[in-house]
Length: 98
Image (tube, rainbow, N blue to C red; front, top):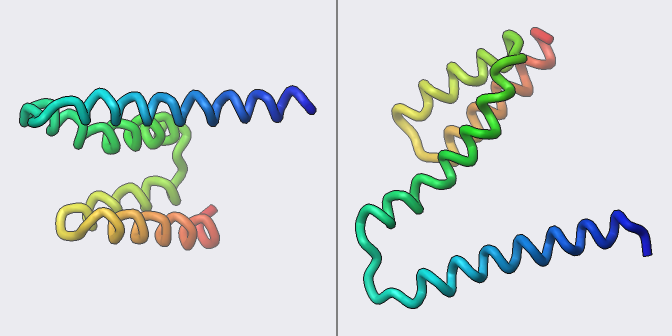
């Protein structure tokens, strides 16, 4: 088998073990402190920020338009609407603006 296969397999196992490990640690507690819960709830936003922020350094007009629309939609809607609006604007803007 190729080296790439083993790298992918090792990455999958490591990802699985970290997720299961975190679940096992948290499940040992009867109650979770509100600050810990708030921190855990903030993780997805922090990860998304680390993915979006570097792209803004090289963003063109299409990306900035999508960002502005996403921010405006986030003031009124839920997460799925935010994602769909931003993705739609990005796709359309890249087709027509470049």
